[in-house]
Image (tube, rainbow, N blue to C red; front, side):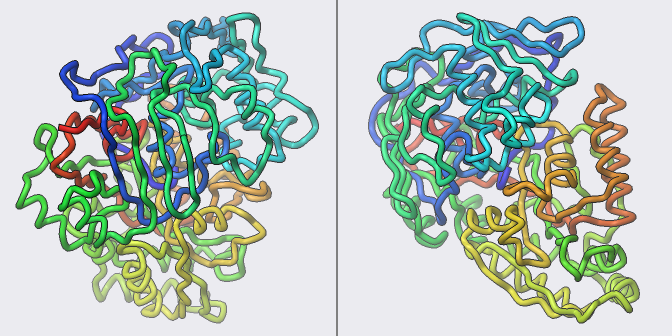
Length: 547
């Protein structure tokens, strides 16, 4: 996901280890009512459930969606277990592991009063797979029987998904150890019949939803308003009447607004120089405290576009960039408690993470010497286009990378874009006119498939929208990624650790930079702070209350 999640999580997703955990953790004394206000620096990509693929959007959809399985409104390990929500308990799984039967719980309703049924999930999957939607997330359908035929336009629906009364039957092409975590993603949330018929690649900006809240309105580039779902009878909190999102203020204004209490959450962040100050002033990670910091299953990286002449079949230059980028300085630009420097794909806390120690985490005269040696004879003219976000510290970090590249003979032209436009254009082969792009990825769920296969499988690069911004397409590694995805337990971790190390040593798709922290600044008005970094970056908005 573009901008998400948490380290140190053990995700239990098999039917033997899933725990039946209550989905409600809000204190019974929490005050209800009022409006929670948050600021975002730039707009979201979409709010459409089958199109949105951005941490800021999923933060909102964590309040609006109801799903077969969901992440409890709890912190730490208790919130990291995919738990039945609309499913009435765990699904019945066939002996070969390829057929899952979910029983739909009664009582869930959309914000327009219509009931949630098994067909609501069939409709979601069919809309998700519809090629006219051009959803970036369709790679998460790869294990469902008939999904690829629908994505390719060869079938009008996904044959492996059927509603039979209150039963939802999902047939797979292969046993999948991560299915229950996948269906907890917003793409798979229940949708009502009206939305099911609205097939529009531009996305729908107002629709009925079945979680604690629904999207009451959206003005792109300006505001989003969420209202409490009057028909919601589930166990999750819905403390505020309204969640108001204001879009377009820079981080300095967000900081001032939260300090004054005219906004309650600086969702877009605050100036990098202020993090140390607010920690000194308000303390860190206090119960319902104003400053909260959590590690994330996340990586910031420079994707090297292997489909363009500069990096195509040029692994020596890709290695040179990894030796040249100053990860320490990049992190310092982000300010206090920004994160931990890295030179590999998988983040700490992820299954398969193994410290690789391939590239330097701090630039010295010797590392630059090694980078120049690798780059010599491989510069191919030395001209490059470097994309970056136009918000926060990103422009300064891009300038730093530009300087690092100059040291090895690459003259990089910086192009700054709104964040959602940056990754949308990067994932479209028709608009990916960059040689390098500064990216960030956070776990959709805690499994290495979500970092390796989702981001680097070469089968994606011909799709109209995808997440392989490196346009990395190496037959050997494509085959090994598929093989790793079929493994379970320790063997799965060993296989992904090997992929991480081998790709970065031989033909780096990226220059990884930092595993970042989620840094949260709240106003003095709010309490009831619960942070589940699997379901949402930042505090759970449905749980936040006014003091």
